[in-house]
Image (cartoon, rainbow, N blue to C red; front, side, top):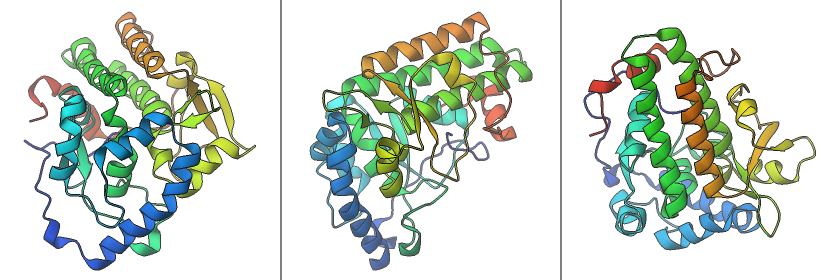
Length: 288
């Protein structure tokens, strides 16, 4: 689910690198070292190319200015530091403007396996390498455009019921694709979802475990399927390619305009008032 918080004029802050402690650097080293063999085995080829293209240092927490020096020429995307969650509309609007809100704190060494909120390892090592791929980057931009369509359809009229259902459908789609998606390849199923790419345990579980149900992505299933964030995902969806994913985002927007997202199944995720209000005031709240 995209970041949540009180609405602010600008979500961005500076990354003060001197504040990182040796314990922080050690957490990054341990996270990176144990993920390398998992990435080699389970990650999609676009991600592996992205890790190489960004020249991430396994020994040190990255400086975002260095990440962007390699990233921006490839797709126009840039990682921009935030202190934590930001409202849903602002998050999607940032994607539309090729900016990725990036958490700059890192999990403590005693919580390497699971952290409910994003940290710099999840965001930079999990998300950002995918942003080096032009087709994936265009899909993120297209998804950000869908947020503006939602504002156009329901936000300007302050139709809270309709808007809540649209946001829930978007959040579910984002969760089961961008965060926890699987993709076909010549080598079998591979991971492209960033929640999986940053999780030592779940990346293996997503591909190898007989407990996971894996289905070709169908939009009507995805937008009506709730999810919980505090355990390994029991249900995952498969796309054929990033071009396929882009076409599904197009379909999502088409269904939005046709009213087919107005009454999706209730349940998770529970939307905060800040997220809903960020869309209601979306015409005046943009990613700086």
